[in-house]
Length: 305
Image 1: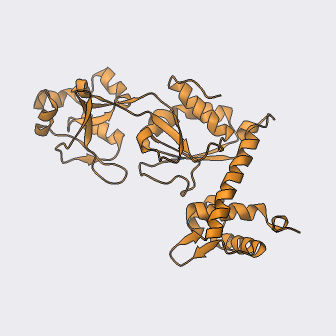
Image 2 (image 1 turned 180 degrees about the vertical axis):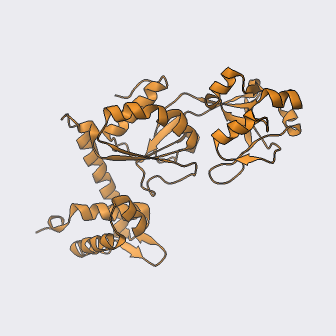
Image 3 (image 1 turned 90 degrees about the horizontal axis):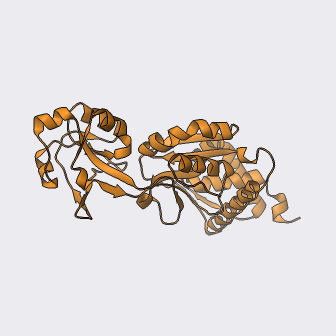
């Protein structure tokens, strides 16, 4: 009897989850089991293979050389299984399993929320988990199937697909603020205005990026109010608390109704599209492809084959 005949498929999934999440506790949460059960499964797998797969300490878990090689091969193997399942033409093939997405807040509002009703209609049996998170993360290490970020924030080793066209970043202010503080005539004039600071997911302050003569210009702006949430920023701008830097698509309603006005529209910056990304060309979950096509279609892009 070969080693593979004695190995439990579930134990392999446990091992891969531990490697991917970097801890027994996190992997247990992902799999819906206890850390103790995972520890027993790993010990059983190591015994059957006759090899140590993980280095364990009180503070960290990391694969051994053999463990890292096995994890890489298993990742490819499970991706191949997913690819095979996708090709099954049986009824319900597009309704398999679970999808976990990590999505930054603007993308959740603009892309995912409008697509949910149609996705649930097409894939009623799929468990879809959406975590709204502006932090830069490793989606594989944290157990996500895919993430949504702007193109320039997608890690180089990931496969990325655009879900939108290019995104336009604009400055906006309320009519009350403009009447009180006066029109902004140039980029340099911003130094004499109150600007709503933007806090990034890594807790750093964002330097506004504007178009200046066809080139991107990064500037630091004055202002004592710092916000990491677009909805709150829009409320603050509407209340006349300062000039905001936002995606134009997030303030279409306010601009249309006159609650906000564009400031220096000639310096608005076109940036990368929002992308969905994942870690292998082989990973092609049919329900994920359905979601991608719904979002692309709703944003005027052709669907994928």
